[in-house]
Image (tube, rainbow, N blue to C red):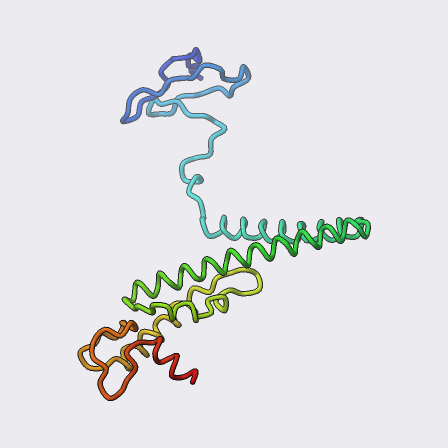
Length: 198
């Protein structure tokens, strides 16, 4: 068996980028490096090249199982903590969770409003002040998650309604009343809303 110098800086192989050198600071009990038939040294502890290919689906399943196990363990830990808490500690924890939930839902409502406005603008709709009448909080669930699909459906539905109600020669997305008002139609969505209220 041929031994290779393991002094720092010694060249142990070549790549397209240049020589492979031994770095200083290695372990004194480092594994012995032996050259292969081609003359490049190999590490006996390293797996063969064929075994390094990874089955990504199996790895994903493994990590998913670990995540589920960790989630279950976290839930059990919370149960044990809750069981060992005094009444005052339980009340404090409940208030903390309620406050956290309230803050999450409030932030989600602001996000839903912003996403709704962006979707309206992307469709070329101009709702004007009528936008304030739309309750975007309905796009947020109890956990504070924003339902983006519901927002898209609502905006698409608004665009269809605007296109169907628009008089000839008026863009379907303009609710501000620009263009003519044939056959006594309201000039804007504001006027239509006012008529409906009376």
